[in-house]
Amino acid sequence: MSAPRNRGQASIELLAALPLLVLMTLALWQAVVAVRAAALSAAAARSAARAFATGADPVKAARTKIPTPDARRAKVATHDDGSVTVSVAVRSVLGGAELGALASSARFEAQR
Image (cartoon, rainbow, N blue to C red; front, top):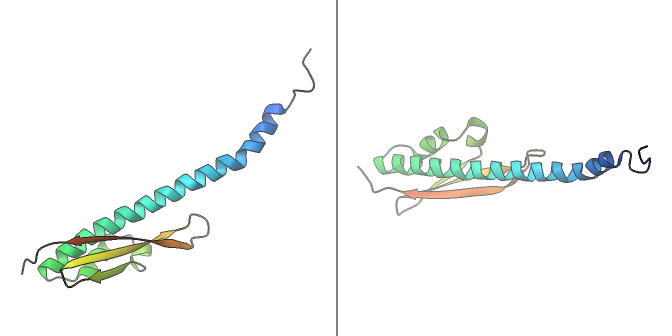
């Protein structure tokens, strides 16, 4: 005969652990979004610096490396030393609010 006191205990334990599993999944997803923003800003900065060094438009070059929704919000700045900085927003996985921005800089010698 089974003990009636232990019936359903695993279900209750799973129910108690479920919010923690959801929270951990969201945190991992948010980390992936942040890494993606860092990679996009680095690629865009290299492309913009290359364009700036050859006399082309660095803003256009940077925005071609960033997907459309993020490209409009990206900030591209050129500096007197020939370097270019690109900032890409990190969006929240819940609600899409902007949590901050990640910036990358790159520089190529002028090829004019």
